Picture 1 (cartoon, rainbow, N blue to C red):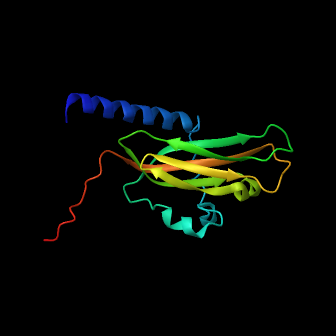
Picture 2 (cartoon, rainbow, N blue to C red):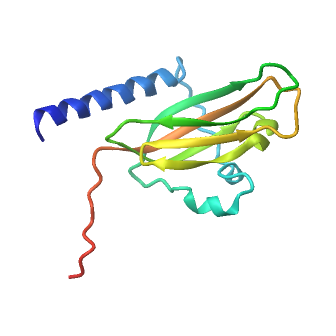
Picture 3 (cartoon, rainbow, N blue to C red):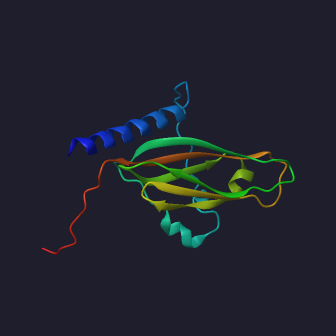
Length: 155
């Protein structure tokens, strides 16, 4: 590996490590990550369920983020897309999204993988609520480094 590539790789790994550490709680906890509610993967969109990737045994929790979307006032509706991007050579293998409340869960429209390093989360608040925000915990699992490509040639 040329020195320049090694420096880029080290910079990305350090950046991801710093972001991951910054996103973790200040005091360690023994509380396990909440169990995944399968209905959160894609709320009501059957065609999207196939796009959800499965983690492998070597997948590592790389990034934890609490996403809070605030409203201007109680009569507003939230509707939007949030993009989460993690630089190469990190590859996102799966993502878990946990809603804080039932209202937040109903507003989660789904998520999709834009590329191996980018995921988009879609939210749309219907019906209106007295809630002042939507809140989600996002857990990004993946691997660091290049994936070995398998040959498609028959032996």
